[in-house]
Length: 310
Image (tube, rainbow, N blue to C red; front, top):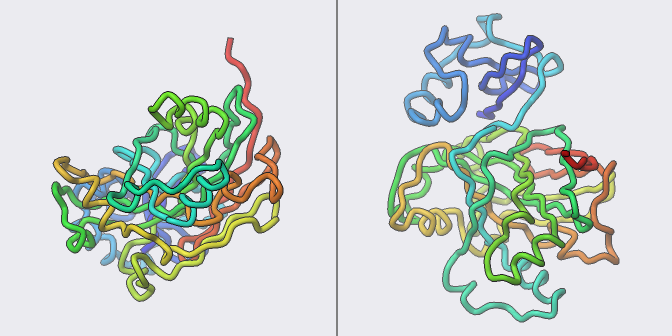
């Protein structure tokens, strides 16, 4: 199933799932209030709610079914309970460091590392991304995210499938000049990352990807385009650390809750920092960035100029 959050013409925001390529189901309306109207509440009782949603028969009901061209898709999980972003693709780490004249860090091969980002700055498909004030080196990052669907602590990597609800495209927007300066102090990234993260257009449940398992991930082609120009190409199967290993690390001594989001980090070639200025300049207002991942759809956002608030 593909889960979405959307805004109706009357401004009501609801969660649901895609019925087909042209329609979405408001699961709260169709179930008569038996299912929640938002995805975080849905995930709090994920196993039971998922079974109820799967048993719905929208074909026999007009109430709660909306054409996609009459609604506006939002971030499928507009307010995740937290957002941890990992650093799990070796090619990206090595190349980005080489471009800065740095050698690979031996410790990277010992543990999967992550940082916490701003889970309250989530954007959805079609939304504008405001270029941060003082930023001249704006970048995209082509990533995949998983959504936690079950509470757990000290989760073993081999048991992780029962804790994952699904996957979606993630764009970890980066202000590289702000990030570079603040990380010299030994903390971060902070202002280089906290202004925006976009996800969507939907969350695909894990069962749909099961036949594509390969390596430590899935055989999913990953692409990024800027103004229609293909810049980045990779595949999720190239993960050095699996989501199982990432979640094992994240949950060590800590309880993970439904509705938390885990990012993979950037796939190889998946950002301008890695590609270099000779391939493409930094992003500017007016640019349109499209991330595409097999089975997960296309996530498009445009860049707009920030304005100073006085």
